Length: 376
Image (tube, rainbow, N blue to C red; front, side, top):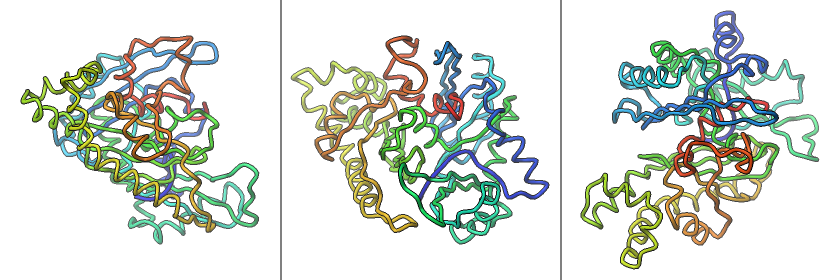
């Protein structure tokens, strides 16, 4: 895909205005207590945060695996199966209102320069830009925008705007799914933006490359000035690492999963070859990261400026915690790499120790971002 942002909105006709008001509400409505709900191809995850003084604490969380193929590429293939899993999670965690994710694989993101107009006129200007940037008729599109500002920088008579566009059919499908599960969506947001809100410190306007390692694929997101500017997906995930370990050690997939998650496995002399096996798998991912960093550094924005230098790479997803992965990427890509802390903008680990193991929390990055109030 292409370039930035968040929640989503509709061209302002009477019918679409009603959809917007219900599912993409004003900021004060987003302050209502809500659980972050992430629906990926592999699982559904939920996290609820409770306020405590000027921060939050982890109140409830849960995760359920989805039957293979019930969701693929963000498309719902078996609504009954997914709704059934969602109902289980709803009953266990006592869920009602949720801020839900939408896959960036279904979204079109672009950045555009428009005349400097009043805030209330921006949406109208962007409506005329939709069809020249995305293959969706404006009448069938739901979109939102973010004005991209840079400290100490003025664009004169023009402003740069990041736009996220989805097909109304996609949003309707997720709305119907949540309704079938008995859940009420307060907002939708692309997964990439939710993850960035969780792992990038609030107010940090530097450029980051976030790598979200899933079961079957990995999402790559470039975030700059607190806005998602680029997303892409690579068909390499934790499942491929598990399969490589199983083949190398001649063990079952469940045993290989245990070995993969056991940090001590990679410290034993007899298993020194094990990391080389994993490195062979993730080398494909490393190559994609390298291509993306080169692309970004040479890519011109609508104002003719080159992409800001990527400050660091942040890894998410449980397999980001595999011993040696950070060092491998840091050495191969010659830039700082770190495992993301999903609690960065929720609370300090010095003040609150959540009942969710750190490695496991890496699978909840999107849900934490969704659970955090938008202005927090």
